[in-house]
Every structure is written in structure tokens, then in C-alpha cells.
Amino acid sequence: MPLNEIAASLYAWDLHDEGVDHALDVLASRAEVNSAYLVGLMHKEKRPLHARFYPHNPVRRYYTPEDSRAYWIPDPSKYGRIAPMTSDRDFLKGTDWLQVLIDGARARGMRTGCEISHTVIDAALAREQFTDVLQRDVFGNIVGAFEAVEAQRALPCLNNPDVREYLVGLFTDLASNYDIDYVQTCLVMFGAGRDDGGTHAFGPSAWQQLLSVATGGCFCSACRDKARAEGLDWDAIVDEVGHLARLSKRIGLEELHERQLLDEANYTESTLLIENDAFMAWLQFRKRSITELFATVKQALASTGRDVEFRYNTYMASPERAGLDFKAAFEHVDSVRESDYSDQLGTPEGVATKRAKLMKCRRALREDQKLIAALGVRPNATPETLRGSVKAAVDSGCDGLSLGHYDGATMERLDAVREGMREWEGQERYWQVLAED
Image (cartoon, rainbow, N blue to C red):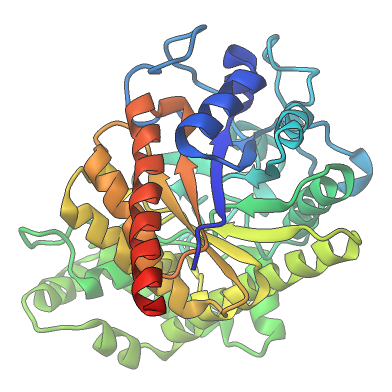
């Protein structure tokens, strides 16, 4: 199976600082990129993510973007109560950066796309004007997007009608108004909770990680109303998940005593689920909510009358803890980008980790659905691990590669992607000749 698509992401500030023509020419010549997408709605994080400074940006050493800004020109008719914010930075505002990328890519015969990244609402704005749409934990606290990293990020509830309208608007806006081949998203789902590290030298066990999901989201009024409409006993769910959350956080003397016993027992995830029916019902409720959202997005894209791929970009090691069931949700996607960057470990073990995650995705997809393997072309990856990752992608039945990300990539690592493809193609021709003989 050939690797037909070699994709690469670009940011609006990349296009401003280096120029779209230069960036695309480098990617095409070095790594044979034939598909370019803009990270069109980007959250706040320091760039480049895994290095102190850019390796090739001619304008700045690093950049800290605004939170959850859109870098296209949004169509107001697509949105209701919530609409995307655009940049206030002088060098970015007023320019349709998605169109800039599309023009450059189409001139080179490339596919084009746009990504809706992790968080879709500016956290400060959400906490000021949209507190009612934010996810809540079982104690009523606002749930952050990446609780182990930056808990102040606000995470909207995917069951809230205003949030659903906003998300559908983002997808249909892009599909209706731009010449793109795919809309990709690594949208954060439900809050996955935060484990406490456990009492073991090697970190939390599997059951402790599952227990920590009880500290996540969501318990907002929209979730309550939807769960009750489905016939669930919401009060029983709140009572049971609340107890498990207190166990996870060691809140209360009785809970502390029980947790100490559990930590010293041969307790398992199976036992946790078997014992707690309401907890299991809540987990299944979150799963159905996510799968329903995927189906809604797929239908909305189809309603535009354009053939635009719905591509999901995985974003965490255990997405099921956020409510995502690969088998159920992936029924409604056209392609999946497995966003594993274990290449950056610089070890064969990292490549093995990537291969295992790709196999997990491939198993959940139909033959007509594409699997794209992300490659971490950033610091700590080596040419050897990148070449090994190309082979792992082929072994896992992938249809393409996706480089993450150009802003932190070195030329040596981009070259290694091309070299890995050449090695694979050489092996493929060798076996074809043997078969013909």
C-alpha cells in the first residue's frame, strides 16, 4: 500500500515570517510534501513547542500566540451565540491566512486542509461571558483542557447546544467558503481527569488512572438534561462518581481509609467497573455523546455539497478516558491522523510505541478510511528514528504521513523523511521483482 499523502502543518506566523512560497518549497523539496494544511484555529502555547528557539525562522526566535484564534475570515452567518475570535496582532490581523496557504498549495498541485485545534474558545472570554457552556466536574468546578499542564484553560461542554452550534459552524464555514480537501481536528473531548501519581514507584496503575476519570467532566446542566432524557438516573451517577472522585483525590477520612486499602490490594480496572454501575453508565453516556457529535459533524460537512474529508487528529495516549471510542466514533470520519510523536524519544522503543498506536487506529478503521501517521520532525528525533517511523507507518497499513511541525523542524529531519520513503520504496520494488520471478 503506497504512502499517497505526505502532509505538513503551517501556522499563520510561519506564512508571515518565512513566506508561503519558501515554506512550501522547502517542504516539497526536502520531504516530498504534497498536502499542506493551516492550523487555522490555534490554542495558546509557546512555539516552537519542543525547543527554546526556532531553527529557521528569519524574523523571531520564538512566538506565543493568542488563545484560540481563527486565522481565516469567518462567515458570520454560520454562527450563533458563540463565534470565533480572530487575531488582534498587527502583523496577523486582517489577512486571510488560510486563503494565502490555499493559493500557494494549489499553485504546486498540493492538497489543502485546515485544522481546528485543541481548544476552540478563548479561555478568558469563556470565563467572562460563557461560563454556562463550560464543562464542570462532579464538584461543580470548571474543567480545564489539559489539567496536568494548564488547568486554567476552559473546556466547553460538547453537549451544550450553543457549543454544538458553534462547532458545526466552524466545520461548515471552512467547507463552504474555502477550496480545501479536508478539515482536521484534535478537539479536546471531555475532561479526562487527573491522576494523583499513585503510591507506586512507576506511577499510577491502570485502575488508578481509570479512577481518576471520575475527577473529570462533565456534570453541567446540559449533560444532566441529556442524560435524564436518555433515561439515566443522574442523581445516582453524581453520587457514585462523586465518591470515586473523592477516592481519587483522597478527600475525606472515610475515603482516605478506603483508598489506602485499595492501594495495597490487588485491585483492577475490571473490579472498578463491575462494582460501579452508575460510573459505567456515565462513561457510556460520554461515549455516546462524542459519537453523536462526530456523526453531526459528518452530516454537516455533507450538507455543504462539497466533498471535504472529515479528519480526526488524535491528541492523547488514552483517548477513551476523554470519552472517545475509536470503533464507534470512527464510523463517522473519512480519515484519522494518529498524532503520536514518539519519534522524539530518539529511540527504537519510541518507534515501537508509534507502531502500536497506529495498529490500534488501523484496527478501528474500515479499508476505505485513510490512516495518516504523524512524524515528529522536531528536536530529539533522529534521522534513524524517523526512517524507522516511516517503516512503522507502512507496516501498520497507513496511507500517508503528516509532519509535526514545520516551525520546529530541522532540514536534517525533513531529509530523513524523504530518505525513509526511499528505503521503503526500494524494498517494495525488490519484493515486486521477486514476486514477478
